[in-house]
Length: 314
Image (tube, rainbow, N blue to C red; front, side):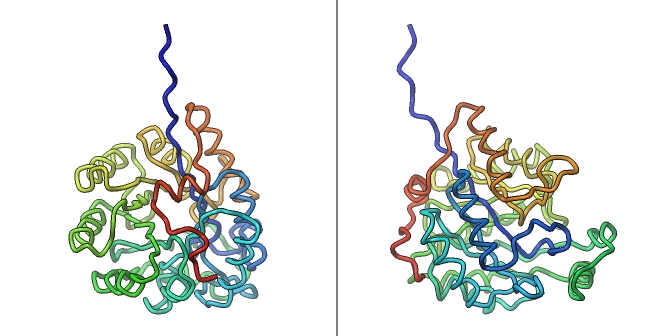
């Protein structure tokens, strides 16, 4: 005799629509203008993403920018067409000041904003050998100079972001590129500067951070379990070709998944993803093949205890 079916676990899919990691010429499909970014975000939401993580780019040069006017353009557009949870970057680009990086999240008060948990080498320079036909003058030196650039996120920087946004009731996607970053998150939890449930986004495969080996993914999960117990929600992103394997492993281990063209330009070996929605569809098919269900935006709000789209500043 079969038992009554149990409620299926809901898996949150985050889609990182565009970002500062890749340059426009590396893929013709990377959204750059506010309209392209909004359309890509809505498409990802329609494919099953509960959260969209957003950077901005200068629509003329494609360069990473935290100029508030671009966030003011695409965020209301997305909100008018979708109930998806909107998540702003505070990472921006490693060439920006902490004040510049914070401005969109501080002024527009999204439901979620990203928050990096440590300073690190962020090596993009190996990409220079793979691409020769640069569209803009800034692209090649931006990547090449990452060999001698620190992505700065000191304890003071993290405190500044948390204190500045404390009245906004914005939750943070806490990005951890290594095991030590989990301990930094625990430090701020002990200081009561972040509140449970923590939304821990473990990042694998960035040169300068932890690798994407299954053993590392297991170790990251085990460490987070020990530090946070039931007071966190775990998600995983893998850079480049690591995207789908690491997301798959996260789901199997009880976690959630982040995909998107910020983290990987690919939709299978040698095939560029033409849309963010294509990557969402791929991980959604894996989730559902495991007899699990994807979370709706409203379900993600309940899981992460978000303030709701009616309480943002746009």
